[in-house]
Image 1 (cartoon, rainbow, N blue to C red):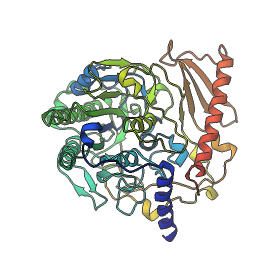
Image 2 (spheres, rainbow, N blue to C red):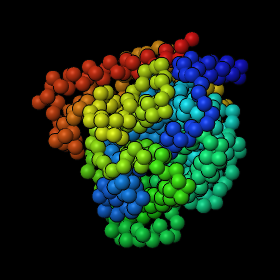
Image 3 (cartoon, rainbow, N blue to C red):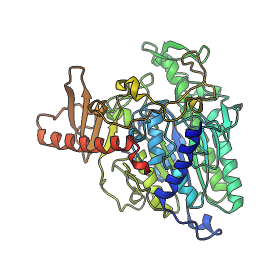
Amino acid sequence: MVNQVLRSVMAVLCFSACLSLGSATGQNGWADTLPNVILLMGDDHGWEETGYHGHPHVKTPVLDEMAASGLRMDRFYSAHPSCSPTRGSFLTGRHPNRYGTFAPGWSMRPEEITLAHIARQAGYQCGHFGKWHVGAVKADSPVNPLAMGFHECLSHDNFFELNPSLSRNGGPPVKLTGESSEILIREAIEFIDRVRKSGKPFFTVVWFGSPHEPYSGLPDDLKLYDDLPGKYATKKVKLTSNETGGQVTRTQGEVLRERYAEITAMDRAIGQLRQHLTQQGVRDNTLLFYCGDNGTSADASLASPNRGVKGQVYEGGVLVPGLIEWPARIARPRTVNVRASTSDLLPTLCHLVQQPLPNRPLDGEDISGFIDGSKTARSKPLFFWEFAAGNLTKEQREPYIHPDLQRGTTPLAKLQGGKATRDFTNFRHPTIAESDYLGPRAIVDGDFKLVIHDAKNGNSKQELFNLATDPAEKENLIEAESAKAQQLKTQMRQWQESVLKSLTTADYGK
């Protein structure tokens, strides 16, 4: 425990040294000069599951209105095809493999610098509401929302359904009655109203538990999709049972009815937030952002024009909805097709609130130029990489954070090892081996995308696509464009070297 305390102290010192930020120059007028910021994210909400992207069934009138009135980013990506890693990228601007958040249930490291640290230093009051999933949310966790820069939180270790049990500011979980998205928005509104009375701007992160399985919906929302069980009665899918917590097989139509009810409820809750901002006269200078954390899960994949699903580095696993509203700066609706990702949020926030970038490798870039139309091309490639954590040896599994501090407390429907709570892990990685470069990975540079899958015989499956002419990733150009493929492979290897250097903790200083 003494070592953990020392590490926490070092994390604070490292944060201060890396940012080298000056203190705020004034205590008044913040809310008038800085935008309020609200960052929303759905859980397993894929690119195609919106009305504005032409889905044949799901109803998202609020997201559709945001797409019609604000900035619609039609090529927005999660930085990883699964949950915890993407959330890490969202918070840090860095690929999650840099700090060992390899897969769902792998925590962050305490030394990471987050959006909340940046916003807090700029004078914002910061709140987190909903799913966390980058470490335990309890008070003594060194990577809970409060430890990672937020002033307040009402959070869950993982996902949740109706009537969720949530932890307030690291305390014991308390069951709240109601539809979970509406609960989170209600709590976020109360936070926003308190902050406004203080005269500070608000920085609010809401990570919904929807539409992650197991699914459940309110009666009125379910009625909207009563026709789906009959339309999709043949295909069977596997998912979690709300009743037993174990796996169950059901017809896809029944599953879609409940999933889409969750999406519609989440959409309605976002509408309640927008309405409140309007009523309070703060919507004009509030940047409201929405995205998903990865592509659609396999049980619900139905009408996607993109190849792949959650957990895969093809477009269907990483393309997600991306929307920004900010009436004071986005007076007219615009659609952009420049590629962007969750890793871009931190450098963009640094620009908007006039704070320096953290002094460490970032994988995202400032996309604030999307807002005024000045940015028409991306300067950095996008990289996707599922680290082959299964290759770690027993000797490589020294805990980065004491396991007692990584134990979750907030219950959920899905049982794992007989438990209704989730624990986390993160390992030290002081040396790099050739096997550390393995795992499904992809690079997108301009219109070209290289995808690499390793094989057990030591060879690899390599695919090259031109996303401008082949967005569905059907035609492999690896032989026709061999020079381009080699260039992208070289870029991938160089980037991996940087990521693995970060994984050894080289970015944290001494």
